[in-house]
Length: 180
Image 1 (tube, rainbow, N blue to C red):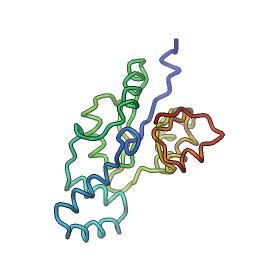
Image 2: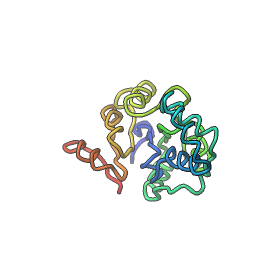
Image 3: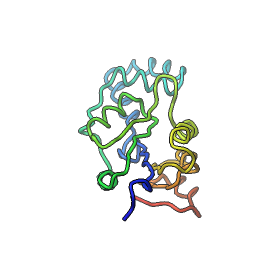
Image 4: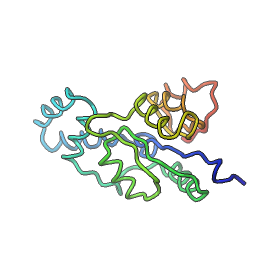
């Protein structure tokens, strides 16, 4: 039996991992579909940075967490890990507004790390944030993309969920758990 002390926190990516889609892309599509002229506003926001774009989309488009396409097999794994006493954190480059809405809906996370108006929490920024909080090799990380390689480099356990081909190829020779 595994002791609670030996269970390192599990940090879970959102887009393409917990949810099969990209939350920002969903919001962006809805925003532009509502009025095609919004594309000019989106371009302006993007010029101010990805974090700002995500922030502005979250202010203009509400997402319903109950209708997102969750990876049910992986979600069941997270729920089982939580039942074992493992702390679970959502760690996403999506805007904090969407991340908190999803976390509140699922009610399985001990905390949320997400992008805000200034910081796009992806790749190196996410790796630094999680390492600062949990220490190098002080957490497990579940992700799916090449952007997650920086985080896996600093995690104790690598979990690949429906990984992109480039991410899977870069992980060759390394130990990981795979969810399709």
